Length: 325
Ligand code: UDP
Ligand code: MG
Image (cartoon, rainbow, N blue to C red):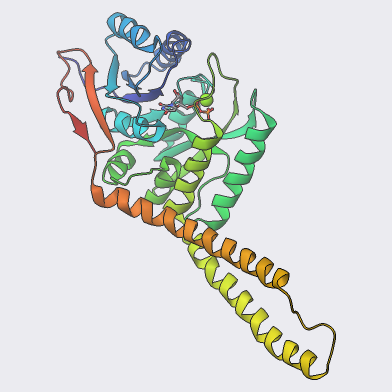
C-alpha cells in the first residue's frame, strides 16, 4: 500500500545512540518542508551501544524509517553501499548520522537535482570542531588524491551527496571491495555539481575514524583510483641505476689516481645496504597493498551480511534477503 518514496535518505550508524533521535527530528523538519514523499534508510553497522533501542523506537513511531541491521561492523563504506541497495527513491541522499552534515543542505541539493544534475556533492567550505591534525591530514589527502587519481575527485567533499537513480544503479553495478564511494561517484560521470556548506561539530559521541582507519581508507582511495605508487618505482630504479653508472667510473678513477677517498670499509657498505633494503621493502609494501586488494576481489565475499531489516510489512521492499553485493 505504501507508494514508492520520491527521495531516500541513507544514514550509516555505528554507535550513535546520542544522535539518532535528533537526526530523525531534523530530517523530518527539512523533508516536510519539501512536500515530497521520502524514506529514511538507516544502516546499523553493528552498533554495540544503545543505538539499537533508539532505532527501534524511532522506527516504531515513523513508518518512513527503515532499518537495515548488519550482522557485525562491516565499515562505513559498506554500510552506505547497503543503504543504496535498499533505497527506493528517485534521488538518494547520503548523510552522516552524527549531524556533522546539516540536513538543511539537502534542500539546496534537491534544487540542483531539479535543475537536472545527477550528482550534487557537498563541499566543506569550513570544518568545525575537528582537530588540526584531522583537518591538516584531510586537506593533504584530498589534494593528493586529486593529483594522482585518473579521474577528477572534487577536493574537500565527503560522502554527503545526492545521487539520481541512474547514478545509484550505476554504483550498484560496481561490486568492488575496499570502496571509496566519493571516487566511485566521480568515476560514473553524468552531470555533477557541488554546493558549499560548513561542516558542523559532532552532535554527540566520538569519531569512528581513528588514525588506523583513516590510513586504511586513504590507501583504499589511492589503490582504487591510481597506479601512481606502482609507476613511481620506475623512477626510483632509474635514479639508483644512474648513481651506479656514475659511481663505477668515479671509484675506478679515484683508485687509479691513488686518492685517499677509496670508499673502503664496512660502514659505508652497511649503510647503503640498509637504505636500499628499506626502499625495496617499501615498494614491496606498496605492491602488497594492491595484491591484498586483488585477493579481496577474487574471494568474492559479500560486502556485508544483513541480519535483520525493520520496515513496514506492507512495504514492498527487500525484507528477507540475507546479503547483497
Ligand atoms: N560509521 C559506520 N561504520 C563505521 C564507522 C563509521 O557506519 O565503521 C558511520 C558513523 O556512525 C557516521 C559516519 O559513518 O554516521 C561517519 O563516521 P564518523 O562521523 O565517525 O567519521 P568522521 O566524520 O569523524 O570522519
Ligand atoms: Mg562525523
